[in-house]
Length: 276
Ligand SMILES: O=C(O)CCC(=O)C(=O)O
Image (tube, rainbow, N blue to C red; front, top):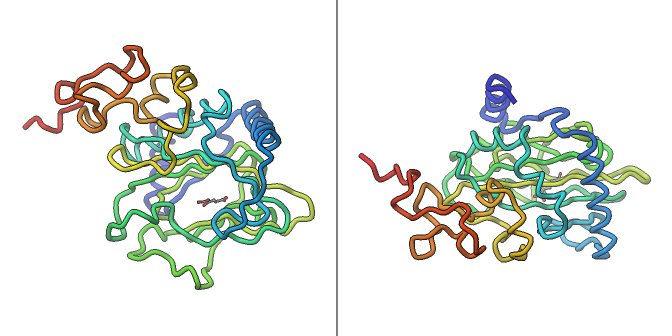
């Protein structure tokens, strides 16, 4: 993705809180991911969890990096990560990956910001950035994400008992919505007879905050060793700004038993923050 296109998307995120990268994902990858998610749902016998956040007619699966190698392509995708790296910074972490398959009859998820637990005064700089991958078409009828444009600039979080005016985010399969995680949004209701809306939330957070899903404990080491260097970094196996996350000054990648991402805290070129 060229610099002008990245800048265009960043401008939209700054102004309305979100952008849509149309046709971001190659159709063959969309099909592969959709069939992988259906495989995981079948293997795990995924059932709706039955609560307002996770829904009553929605199948959700977490910890996708532990579920199959195809999912490793998502957090590092060339049409998504360069935008996220500019919203946060290149030291950002993968905060979580959630497959969200909204079934007929689902009601709307409460409208919320994804940085809901980050208890700092609003509005604030992006501390999280979410990419919502459409693996099926997202329509108003089938539960496409709903959002309140501009709400990333509000000075408060939503009142969960209030009716909130939202717009539907409609996008074709293969498109990705990327948003400042203070944006008020939620999964829509699915009023279709038989259409499932399949999306994956790939969320990132600033490198000095705590990810929502624990990639380091949740993904077995033998799978983690197959990750690319960039994916390892996104999962917290390097030091943030050459300082944060070290194990006796060594890069956390040391636990994987190879010398990838080898660096020493305070001696790494990334530790420039300490230079005058
Ligand atoms: O499914 C969606 O469209 C949004 C899901 C979401 O916002 C969430 O689970 O935090």
